[in-house]
Length: 101
Image 1 (cartoon, rainbow, N blue to C red):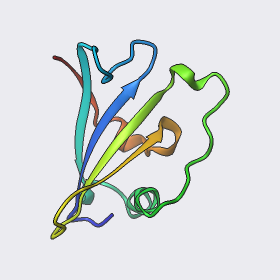
Image 2: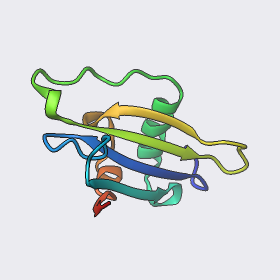
Image 3: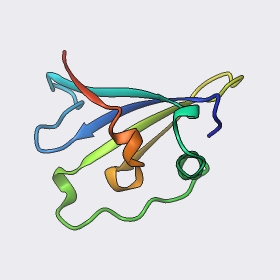
Image 4: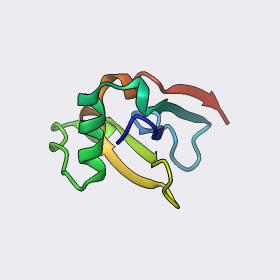
């Protein structure tokens, strides 16, 4: 991920099943690449590069997952990954807010 890229963030799951079919709550956010540190951009770049995030903790069935959509500057279409909450930098998790649908 580069400073000029944009990352759309969607939080899914949890005990309430947010963001899943039938849910009335949608949790979304957006962060610009320049708002993240070089280390955070590198960590996200690795996820989009095929790095496998650490396995989820036991009992994480009700844990959150994040669908990350990377809009690279000059790219024809965005890249999408879905990862467990532990793989997402705090600044990216914190950009999410809940909306009623």
